[in-house]
Length: 283
Image (cartoon, rainbow, N blue to C red):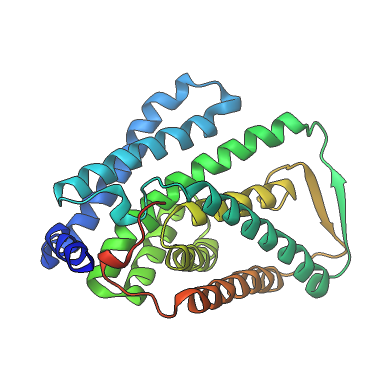
C-alpha cells in the first residue's frame, strides 16, 4: 500500500523544471483574482466589504489550486488544502494557538514596555466582533491558500523547506507592500509571520491549523486595537515606546511561537519527510 501511494505521488509530481513556472503561474492567477475583485467589491455594502473580499479570494484560490493540482493528476489534499474529518479540530486548535500568541504579546508588552491599560472603544459591540471574526477567517484562508498552500508545497517538494520558506516569505512581503504597508513593516513583520505560518503547515501537515492560527492572531490584534484601527478595546501604554522596542516584542512572539511549533513537530514525529506521499490527507 505504501509503495502504491509513493508511486501515485511520483506520477502526480509535475516535471521538476516546471515547478518555478507553475508557482509563478499560480501567483499570476492569484494577482488576477485581486484585479477582478476590484471590479465587484464596489457592489458590496461598506460594512461587509472586507468579508466579501475574503470569501471571494478564498473561493477563487481554491478553484485555482484545484485547477493546477488536477492538471498534475493530484488533488487539493496533495497541497494540504483538502477537507477531512480532522479539519475542524485542527482549525480549532489553531484558533487556540493564535489566542495564546495574543496573550503572549500582552505579557511581553507588560514586561518590555511597562504598564498597560485597556479602554473600551466607543461603539464597539458584540455583533462587530462577530463580523470581524468571520472577516479575519475568510481573509486568513485566502492568504494561506495563496502562499502556504500550492506555492509552499511545490517549492518545498522541489527545493526543500528552507528555500520554500524564504521564497514564500519574500512573496508575502511583496504582497503586503503592494497593499500599502511600509517597507520595514513588510520586510520584518510579514516575513517573520510567513515563516511562523510555514512552520504551522509543517507541524500540522495541512492548512486548517495555520488558517485558524492566522485568523485568531489577526482578530486578537484587532480586538486590542493594535492593527492601526479602532478595535473592541484600545491598548494604552504608559509611555511612547520606540519602533525598535515594539518590533522586539513582536519578533519575540514570532520566535517563541515558531520554536513551540518546531518542538511540537519534533515531538510528534521527528523531522518531517519532504515527499508529497508523506503529507497526510486533509486540511
